[in-house]
Length: 460
Ligand code: FUB
Image (tube, rainbow, N blue to C red; front, side):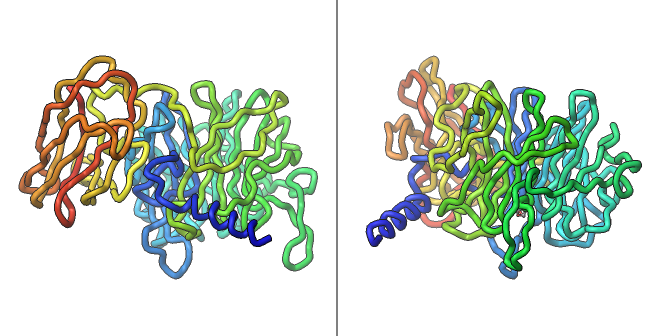
């Protein structure tokens, strides 16, 4: 019994210790991210997330905006910053409550469905997946009489063009969206809102604290179709939450409970929230944990695991890991201009947005911080390394290494003051020959305090 406790402690510690990139989870290290909503569009995965602030207010979810990240290889993610926030809704007075989003494309427009906790579900629209998003209707979308339960929207457009928006905690509701995606068919249910029957067959059941039997379904639905079967994946069993799923032969049910997908684990938060995609022939399960904040449930982080459906379409039990995605599905070209905010792992850094130009860059760079970029294909020998940098201070250096934080040193880029923290200057240095596929490490060196900002890089 004692040994078991010791082992458990070691296991928990193992998840919370900074690992110098032994793993790939969580996906984002520069911010706390939660409620993953992946969207595949045009050969790219766009990962929309909610965002737990670094400072938690009143020991509750402190969430003001929604962020977006993208990847074409599933290991390097480009930060697109906060793509929408509560400020997008001029009619809303809420200063907190930017909870779980989902974005979907239809006819070249991107619709971002978001809950404002306490003010129901709303929609934003943009011409690009990364925004800018605007409010097309100037009011909440879901006009129900259970506004506090209207959270966690999930949306899917079926093959016949009919779009469905499901949501809810602890109930599950849906509307049939009209083709414009910003209104819905009012002829169904109650003023258009259909309440799903929460039977044991559909969503399993459990005994609540009050002794009453209720559905295991809790919140965070993720609705999609695969091989003519409709899936509803959701957080279940109350707090702490497990991830479970049900399937149905039609988008409107009847639902059949199919089992658990993710059980509890020491580094998972008291909430969990899933998003599932197929991309480049693989299946991916996104969820959130509290590994980055070392156990703080209001500071969560999105993680991802690859999995394989069983031949009958059922989803296996997925174990949350530190390793995450083992293989990148394509190689990164280091001879193209790469945004500095494209990274597989980083420590000590933040990203920031230049509000005038929308440009995202890496900031808060201190001595010893680093960025890891995975699977760069040096199909020819580079001679030079160039980067866009800016600094108000004395600057510092970027050590360019491969395959480890203290791996082979290819070169050192000196960064001096450029007279402003976004006064971007191109700097270059010579680099050693290197061939083949390598992980690149940018290790930042310098004196005390913030050294410089980093916008892009390129081998030449
Ligand atoms: O992130 C706030 C809430 O926590 C979400 O809406 C729920 O799904 C849970 O993850």
